[in-house]
Length: 186
Image (tube, rainbow, N blue to C red; front, side):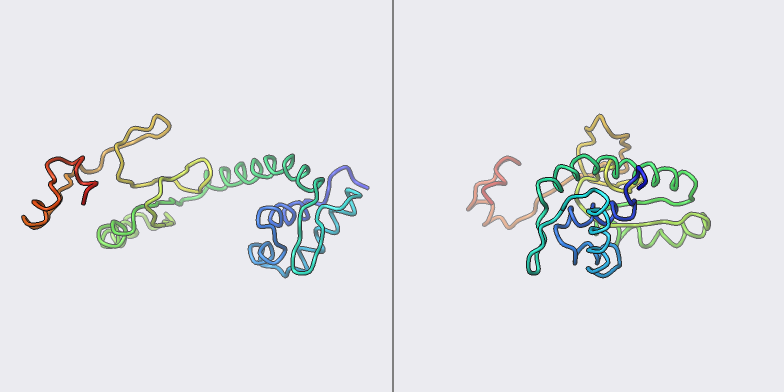
């Protein structure tokens, strides 16, 4: 027996633990649930213990399975991060995220020009309004509307804008808005 567990089985085990399902792990890994089960059995045989309790249409991690996953999951995440960082450092790609409206109404018109100017750059665009987590998401650049105050980010103001609220005079009189703080009444 080698001193290293079967690495493919660790990958399948991690997916099964995160998703708590062999079926969902199979979908994520593009294999059948049976293939996931086979890799889990291989890992269990190598370890000499059971990692999941199998029930009808359900798998539950054992205490040993939970403890083992807690120990190996950070290492698997480090391997994935180191691999992604190395791969991305040698690729000509940019992963960009921006709010859906900005992507559709502003960036979509400018994208053909960008592609023409930078034909060797693969551009990966996603749209979201959530703050980007650069430590856990494969994102190089995020365009967001926020106050720009975050010491963990390098922030550049793209456009200073103003927010205005419009309503009918009757509605204004009825709810009594005098300042921005009063908008909660609306």
